Amino acid sequence: MKIGVFDSGIGGLTVVKSLLHHQLFEEIIYFGDTARVPYGSKDKNTIIRYAIEAVEFFKNFELDMIVVACNTVSAYALSEMRESATCPVIGVVDAGVLATANALKDKKSNILIIGTKATIASNAYEEGLKKLQFQNLQSTPTPLFVPLVEEEIFDGDILTSTLHHYFKNKKTPDALILGCTHFPLLSKTLQNYFGEKTLLIHSGDAIVEFLEKEFYFSKKYRDPKLKFFASENPDALRKIAQKWLYA
Image (cartoon, rainbow, N blue to C red; front, side):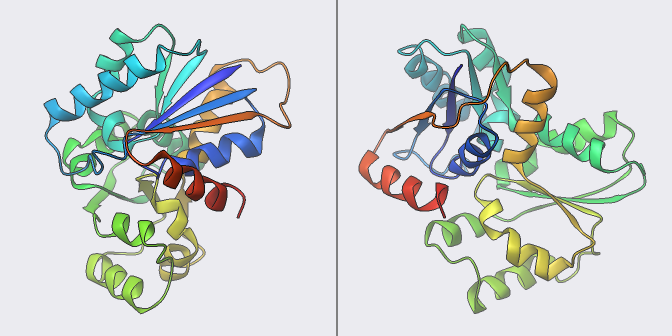
């Protein structure tokens, strides 16, 4: 089993970490479009064009499937990627919606969705959850979290002030959907901020749950091959991968 993982930058490494932990694939090929990150502030047509270019890149490999780790791309360009691809393409938004539904049995649960401006503007999570009869949905763009993560600021005064800026008037949710693959690196701080009763929905764990439900995996791969590609400075991506994946 060989999988391609696509992200606009480095955030999708959190999805790779979940895939590694569950040992589902023999080989994982990661492509981060680091030259053009972030996608969250770009228009829909640009996001679609970049996403199709990523599919063309993956055609250099014989993949069994592609996982779109970027929430923004999953929200705006999944259908176009599927039309261009020669293998299944799975996005984190659908997986996140299903993971939320599986975890929350009360349709009146308070759910807060955070993500980039583009992901939140797409209403992709809200539409998916409303189809499953969830009623109490809030969404907040939290774009400052992305540069904080990339600066490896995972706690401290700056992050605390940013949390207060975004959430000071928000009711404590029953579930918090981390609608950007950077955000799981802030999980500990977010959990402390909202309290242990708030369930965090993590894109990587949601993808694994979705894959194990929808596909048959005949064996575990204890030592998968990893290949990392980036549209700019691939060596920097590889260094970050070594730090994030094995921390």
